[in-house]
Length: 99
Image (cartoon, rainbow, N blue to C red; front, top):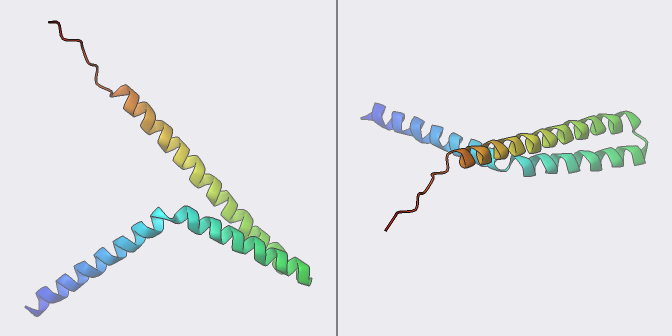
């Protein structure tokens, strides 16, 4: 009986982890934009205070997050276009019934 409870706990833990991963995946674009904004703000602060090296490092992080955002948009538009063509190709043809 104790083994069964442990197995159920493991299954519940795995389900929770999958739910968290799906939630992150659903909101990854918002997270990436937030990271981009924070990186730009930190870079601006570092340049304003005279920390040139850390400003450049922050700008590199911002550039990386911007590239990641661009890839997300490109992938979503490709996926959306592929899905639209598939819907057009598989649309059923209706014939007019003769009376």
